[in-house]
Length: 242
Ligand SMILES: [Zn+2]
Image (tube, rainbow, N blue to C red):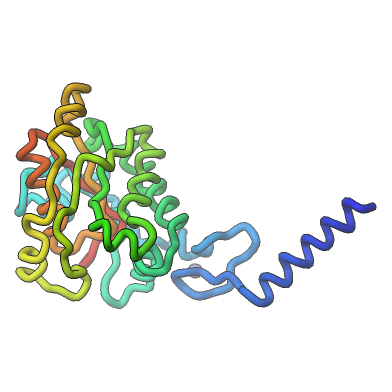
């Protein structure tokens, strides 16, 4: 009897919490049902997937190949400036939705795990945040996405190889050339960590960011990694301008 009383109390507590703090879909804003987290089933079903993991010379690959020698590239979904799916990225980046970042990362990781193009990847490397920005935000969104991808692909997550040594302006409001100049030379590799990985025969890395817009951030990361002798593939959740 005590147990059923407690469970009904628990249920009414959950009901009350729903009443005062209703959970809404990050994309369409509708109330979420009990089994849903962050995104409702129908928004998840309608996620505008790119299918770039099935296409060798896809739009993500071509965008990056203009900037550096990239092995393979893919984004999970398209988002234009009008798309509500942009809210997934905002939620992950500025809304503290860490779990959503991991979950979307796992979704992308499953696609990449089934792709021939990405089978050579040996470790997953997130684009680092400057320590000051990481401290302000509480976490690095690219690292959370990379954690989900690493999980799904059964690969190690590598966070000590690449460092952001310069504090740069946020890329969100910059365009074209200004973006490239803003991040150029902002990243360095740790030579000791690079030597350690290469002693373990790890040479093929999968670089992860939240979105692919001009490709300047991924290129700024790929340059020092390639100089250190690594081969680079890249993946992001969002693909801008699709
Ligand atoms: Zn929805």
